[in-house]
Figure 1: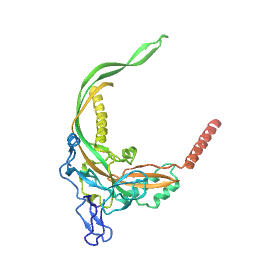
Figure 2: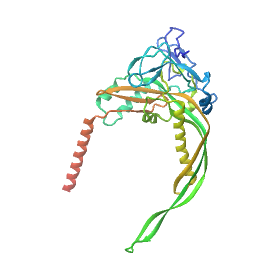
Figure 3: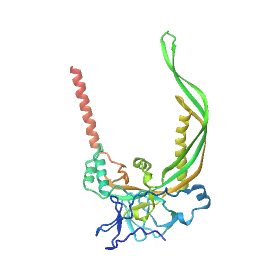
Figure 4: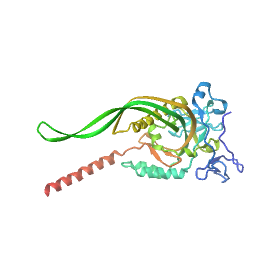
Length: 357
């Protein structure tokens, strides 16, 4: 069965929704609250899945679930929908569409980072961000003043843990400044690097290397939303999703694992340079190994605002845990032109004043 994310109010029957401010399930009609959904999690670490075993033997029924996934016809986002929802609006491009009727078996989220920033706080952060933009069109600021609603959506991510070891060969460079006399008898200095062979082994344990499973939000936006406090992850419960949307992962665990390994290797290279020491380092060869690789599927909270300016869609994303804002913005070329003209006038006045003095 597809997991139902609907929580009827026991008083009036309306749907309860998760309230980021209190962490409760709240009824927007009669005010009923259930103070059970948002309790701070202080239990053991979330269960990790052994990657090699999962890829070789497949995942058991406890790790997967039938999920109803609908595909946005405009931007291609995959949105998970509860059985009772038949039509929705895409949070990534604001396109209305009818939900699909089919279901897919997918890996269940092991953890969720609940929303902590309320929609009102998100709108204020968006307004402050928009007003802080240089050369932003006035129409964009009018958009902010209208208090447009934002959409809360959980984005799919993977986390990876691993024990790694890397054997390396390279060279350590020592830099010194030497004096010499040139052909005309003048004393000069030059910088000389002396290289010495270096080799060794470094080990490192990685915990919760975060890889996006989203197929919609650009990498630049993911970087702009970071960092995330993954220590606040709670075991997944559909109550956290009540009133919000969730994107289904488009990047599976295998390609995500490759991305995580590349991130670990880059970090290992930094460790190798520190191990080589000296003033400069050269890395000629690295034999990288990772073992005890585990992973989990988690959902992270994001507020999205989609607006159109002169026929083009722009999207702003806000970290639902910290309030950090990132996104696209248009430019007012009129304002840029006026600023350039003003700069030329100021430069001309300064030049004229200098000539008269």
